[in-house]
Image 1 (cartoon, one colour):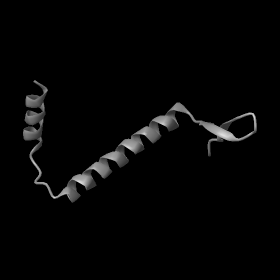
Image 2 (image 1 turned 90 degrees about the horizontal axis):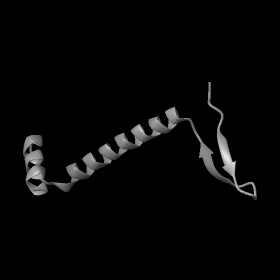
Image 3 (image 1 turned 60 degrees about the vertical axis):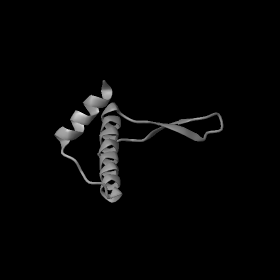
Length: 66
C-alpha cells in the first residue's frame, strides 16, 4: 500500500514542501549516508593514493587532535 503524498502549497497553489513520515525520513537519511559512503570510496579509489590500515589512520587522527 502506497503512502499518500502530502504537499505544502503557497498562496498561488505552487508546491513548496512535502510532508513525509518520520520512518520514511529516517530511511531516506540512511540511504543518503550509504550513497555518500560509496561516493567517498569511489573518490578514494580513483585518487591513486596508497591506502593505509585503519589502525594507522586512527593513530594519525589522534596525533593530529592533540
